[in-house]
Image (cartoon, rainbow, N blue to C red; front, top):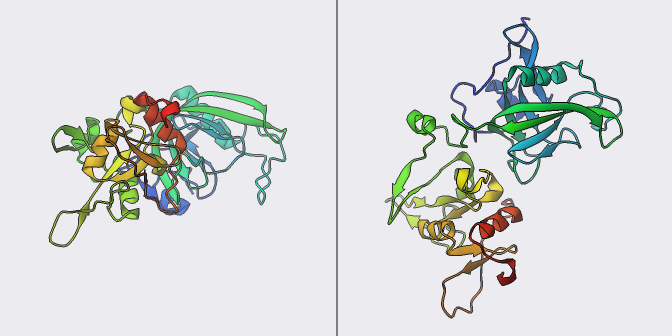
Length: 310
């Protein structure tokens, strides 16, 4: 069998935000060459080992995932059945050598998050391709189990096709970093990523705040929008993950985005400009939609909403 050649960067037309039901599906899409191992490595143009992808899904206790920055544990030294670290790792392991080579050569690394990873940033089921990261540093240290482990710091790259956008968006929009514009009373950007579409399906396109389902055709189809609690991009630096997305009607979406509505940590909906309202409204949720408190708090901070009035 010929040696695997590493493939760096995005693969074919698979965009960040694309979901996969299993590791095998990720492998078939050529995002990661392994079905179980965390590090995908192969030979680069100089026939040296280099890594082109990693999976984050509860592989090692020492992994740290903060979305834009990942502290990743190298391969080796684990007991297969228990995932306990029982021996030291080494730089000679091909996966560790591959990630080190990618740092030296500046090769981008694809990151795939699995359902068993950090709850704030991982899909609730299956696996999701989350774009390209660069390896910026590596070192050796004692891990939680006391054995020496190889550590890698990865940072998310900015630029071409790094927004978590749906596959069917036009190529020009993707390359320009734009999302489709929908004109209402103001012109605003509405992102309809794979994550947003999934969240909307959970609520049958019915607003989680006002319970409005906008019928848009004779077949009874409803329209709703995926609203990010902590804004995406430079405006808020929030991630496109289930715990940061709500299913809202356009009116509630605009009011949330403008700070007219906000949510408390226990999911009470507060209308900042309502007059003499004694009724309390709570966000409608389904069991598998785990809304993260950190995103609620980030949204309130962005509108200078003091914790003392919540």
